[in-house]
Amino acid sequence: MNAEDLLYCDTHEWVFVAEQDGQKIATVGISAFAVEQLTDLVYMELPTVGTTVTAGEEFGEVESVKAVSPLYSPVSGTVVAVNEGLPDNLDTLNTDPYQAGWIMKVEVSDDLPANLLDHAAYQKQCGEAG
Image (cartoon, rainbow, N blue to C red):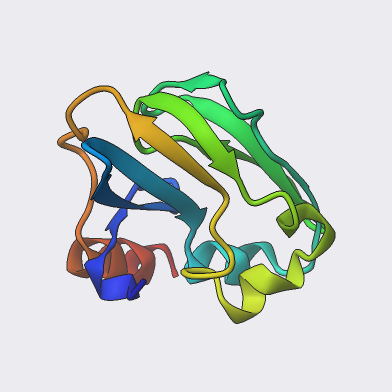
């Protein structure tokens, strides 16, 4: 996935939605900007497959030596896959946050929220945040 083709939450999660077997499947991760801000990642809590997530609500957390940050779902639906190897390989988020660093896949149950940002709007927000 290319960072320019993704949609973003203002809380730094990204989402890519694709049709798969007649269903909308959203791949979710956290942005390179978020990983850079958090610095040394030490722990990540993933949701369980089958869990229902709601757009804008917490689905897990990521911990760095600096802070614990909640992860918010950009979409509503059911978790159909998680990147099980990621918590043991958090360095993947530093090297490849938009491909190998995906966190979960969700079968989308509702329309995408209107507050998701395109790449240009997200970059502007990150620039303002410093």
